[in-house]
Image (cartoon, rainbow, N blue to C red; front, side, top):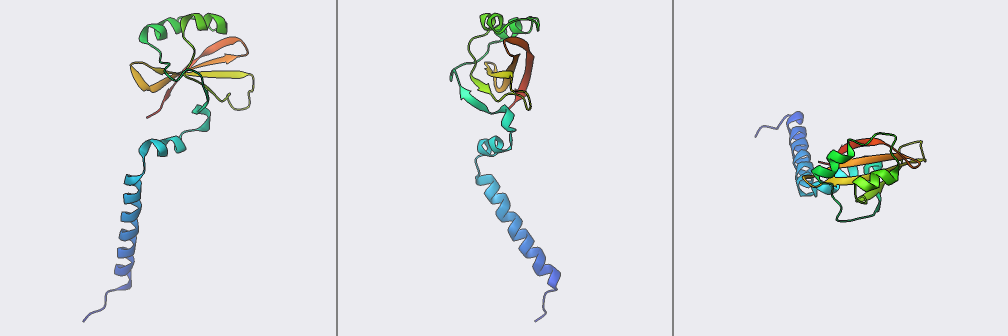
Amino acid sequence: MMEQPVWQSGVKYMLAGGTLVATLGLLMEPQALMAKLSPPADRCQQVIQPQAVLSRDRLAQLVTLPETATSTQVRQVVPPPYCQLAPTQGNSTTRREAYPLAFDPQTWLIVTYAGDAYTGYTFSFRR
């Protein structure tokens, strides 16, 4: 009977370990994994309206607002947000509100304010 070279038994252990890691990865819930990987800045600090979504019409109205608008003027165009996000890093005077899009709930519109002044919007892709 011939002995196996040392490197062949090492390969077997690496394959077994890799298979175990892959199996555990498949058993994990993908959304929980993505939540852990997403930056904390895009996580809700406070849910305001759990059923809130932003329609195409409201989105079209919002993008026409000037950046000199006030939060009151923005609120006339869009309903209360789904949630409030953490302020941008290093700037405690900013406020950010998130709206899932009605036609693509995995994409959120993030509306930003500095004090009471509307400063614009960005999109967050949550896939």
